[in-house]
Every structure is written in C-alpha cells, then in structure tokens.
Amino acid sequence: MPTTLLMLPPQIPATREWAQRLATALPGLAIVVAETEGEALAAIGQADAAVGTLSPALLAAAPRLRWLHSPLAAPPTGYFFPELVSHPLTVTNVRGIFNDHISAHIMSFVLAFSRALHRFIPQQQRGEWRQPPRYEGTVYLPEATALIVGVGGIGAETARLLAAFGVHVIGTDAQRTAPPEGMAELHPAQALDELLPRADFVIVTVPHTPETQGLFDRARLQRMKRGAFFINIGRGMTTRLDDLLAALQAGELGGAGLDVFEQEPLPAGHPLWTQPGVFITPHVAMWGPYYNERRYAILCDNCERFLAGRELANRVDKALWY
Image: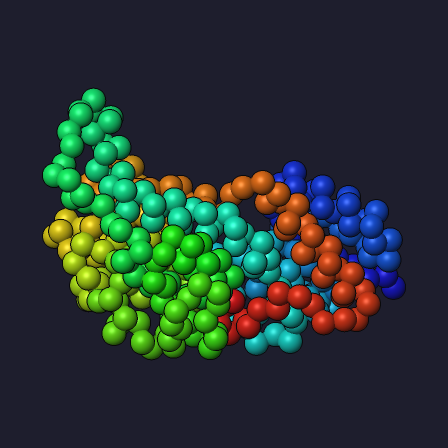
C-alpha cells in the first residue's frame, strides 16, 4: 500500500499547486487533495500524513496517521485540541521562514517611533507644518534598550538588526539559554516583570500558548517605562487590547506598533484605529517575496524525510503548541 499524504480543506491555489509539485517530485507518495470536509473524511482512513487543520472527527477516523503538517508557523487557537495533543502522531510547522520579513516589519516600527513619525504622519494628513521643540519626541537608538519577549528565529534576527543601530538588546525566552548575535542579555521568561522597566521598546514575538494568553495585561503594561513603545507581531491573544488602550489613553506608553490583535480583523470603530501614537498593520508582518515557495520547501523536505523514515524538521511540542 503506498504512503498517502492528504491535503486537508480548505484548499487555495498554492496548496493545489503544492500537491501537483509533490506528486511529480515524489512518485512514491500518493497525494490526495480533499476540497471538502466530506472528501477529507472519506480519505483520512488511508492517510499516513496530512497537511492543514485536523478536526477531532477526522483524527478519530485516521488509524494510520503518523504526521500532521501545519502550513502556518503558529496555527490558530483550537488547532491543538486535547485528542491531538495526546495522540502519538508528530506535528510540524513552517517556523523560521519569515524571520527576515517579520524582523524588517519590527524595525519599521522601531525606526518610525525613534524619529517621531507617529507624530508627523498625522500632521501630514492634516496638512500641518509644525516643528516640535528641537529633539523632542526622538529616541537616540545608541542610548536605547529594547526588550525582545520570545527569542526564537524572529527575535534573534531582530536582535541582530537592532544591534546594528546601536541599540542595547535584552531578551526573555522560555527555552533558549544562550543569547543570539546582537543580544547583550538573555533571561528566562520569569524575569519579564523585572526587565520591563528598563526597556524603551518592548517587542513581543511569543506565540499564543496557554502560558502566554493575556501575558500583557494592565498590570504588566504599567510595569513598562513611562513613554516606552510597545510592539506586538507575535499573536494577538498575548495582549489584552482594552488594557493596552487604557495604557495609551493614560499617557503611560509612548505608542504602539501592532500587527496582531486579540480580535481579528480589528473591528471598525475600535478606538485603537484613531488612538494617537498607534501604528496598525493588518497581520501582514510575514508577507514578502517567496512566502509560498518557502512554505513548500519545508513541506517537500519533510515529505522526503517521511518517506525515508528520517526525523522530521520543525517538530512541534504539541503540549506547548509550538
């Protein structure tokens, strides 16, 4: 019986193309593309591997399934349901392929805040030529400290870029113990509260997990240095939006650069849309050239490994969700 890979719905043009390319590149792998949940349920019983989002019903009907691949770096809430966490199958993802795009997005926020563009862009939109007192509102980066919360591949690349601008970079991480290039200090996740008052920029890159949900609430935001800038490109559920808005409205923070939100899309009319000092991008920090090609490369490599019985790359700790 051939080794079978099931492409779970919904399909997009990219996933259909991946299926065709895999079938050509790996003739020993039978590819099944399910366009509907019904088609997936009919095929899952013969699947050795699957790509996409698996439901409890599909998992219960999958006696042969040994590998599930997520085409996202951080799947949405609910992906790791209890039966999947306890199941012996291996889960992989595509972490690492967005490090350059997302770190550039972070730097765009840092540089914009350091040159007070959060003040000048609204003035431009109003047609106002208004110079503040000299140097007011700017941040001299060689005298600034940035705290990166979550030092995976994205955090490490961001540290390297920040250091090139002279920023003193510190970080916290739940697993990593050695600081990457450009990072002066790396501390355990439990040190977050004592580090927050030191930072001019707090940059959140951690995934959404049971431990990080609501990590930045009102009390933690109040531990930040007054006038510091908050940047979140990790996952929206790590930050309580109402608490962040309250900190901004109280003048406790200098501004916020946000690509992810507790509720997405951010609702029309939400006060954050018009809150001074806030940059909003619609969850696009990972976008850039070669996005789908990089996702396919990891999938193809792991398919080759799976057929050869070798260890899969980008394995996920299902209990931790990453």
